[in-house]
Image (cartoon, rainbow, N blue to C red; front, side, top):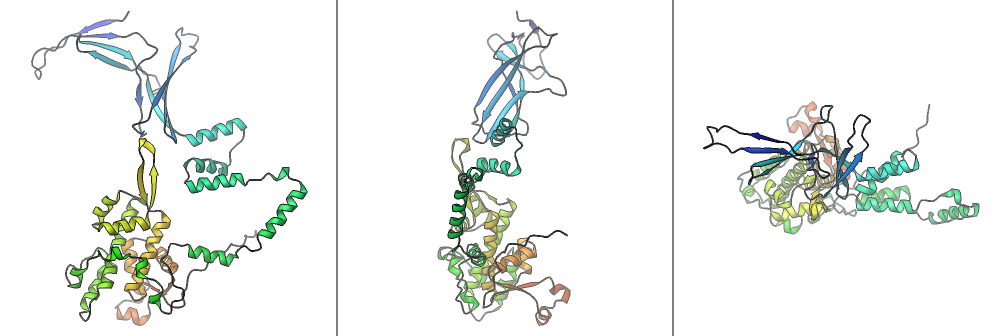
Length: 434
């Protein structure tokens, strides 16, 4: 029989009239009690479905009543969530859930087990089961392969499947079969490209603008339309810069050059000014994605944050981001990110535009400070587009009123004919022990 207690409260000064009497009863233990769940530090999708489980454990010798163990389990395509009853501060505490009946002013207390959730990567569960079944220790390569199958991109997962299909157990082959395979490999590899040819292919596949290798002058190496499309070029407004108004820019590199062009009143400088404004947009976009570690919000938010035209924002997303679609939560969601390779692509395209503005001889000191990158990283970007890196000559830094120590911090990226691209990577010789 449930126990009953009565509690009567005195009227409070903050509440008009006395509070009613409440009858509190403790309900008998049920096989299907309410469950309290705690998920500290774990974020679960709101649509995750959970299944309850109960297990009757054998009681210790001193206890006659069997103990019930409860478990909640839910999962997404990649993550499993498991809730179990755990001790708090070294001991188990009993929790209750009260159900209030407004008609009778009765409160019925039910014993409610409290479950704490933990998160498990399903790829690890599969791997552990495989290890337990075979009684072996999985190597780092096998572990990375298991993670790649579960979390890798479609391209990497396809590559893993191809490797498994092409895996051959030579222990079951006869001598004739292995000899035939070796002879066929030798015949098929005669026409394979050399290391130099492979290096050239690697350079051609780098994300730099299209190169005219037959150029006779530096201004013929790159085409502006391959970097800034005509639709983007037409929405870049520089009328206030042409008039000498509002020459301020957040970029020191851009600021110094628009002031220099504004001082020349002999001709219009619409083209270089438009290129400079586009460079300033690229610098802002590069810094914006760096703050998010490559992750970007929706295009409209980026457009608003950078105060750029929709056409330019669309061009940045098309050339410098990659799109992924997440299917969790019951609906597809598009997300955009700038990978390290695409971040380098931004630097390569920006380097070519800077060369066009500075007559193919760029002092990269201000640009380095604007981007917040190391000098080595920026000089490598200019080398990848065909530049050689030089120091300021004495007449140059003297004309700029610099000391020799100050001039040592300024590097020049110079594009000249014939073009000088970095040499293709070659296989390093195996180190010999001493």
